[in-house]
Length: 188
Image 1 (cartoon, helix red, strand yellow):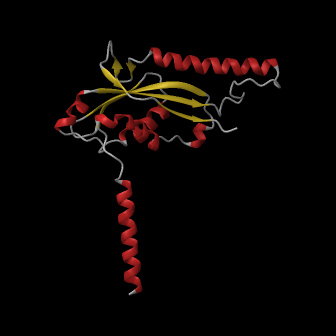
Image 2: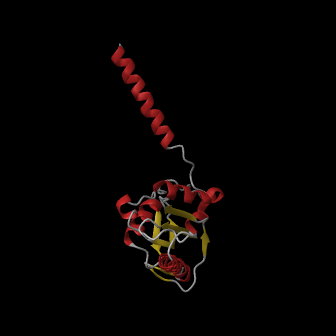
């Protein structure tokens, strides 16, 4: 009898866990801003890679949603490092199955989406974060500002290349720009 009760409790907990996982709302036009939350929850970079990065940039992710509620025509601004592209691809595709496509939401499948992603990983810079610190040498300060300026230029180039995707260059694009999301790692 005790074994049956234990099995029953286990199955009840398993069912409750499955219910909690499926509780996330479907994506519709009224809550399209939640795409960022899905992506944030599923974006992951290996910590060994993260610890070596000196990166401050923006990536623009372009995608469509098929009539089956799956991500299609996924593209990333040119120059995006492969490990970032792979992590973002996995995170964006985590929305598959969460798009509510019915007659009232048909416009979800006729829209191109742009998701701006800001990335700041300074652990690999080794010179600090570029902040004002009065107790450093002028040489170190100069190195910090050079690194900070170079990473800021990368971000600027990403904005200039907003129509240059790894899937090809667009002369123009009718799209819906989603709220930006950002990822960073600065352990001090």
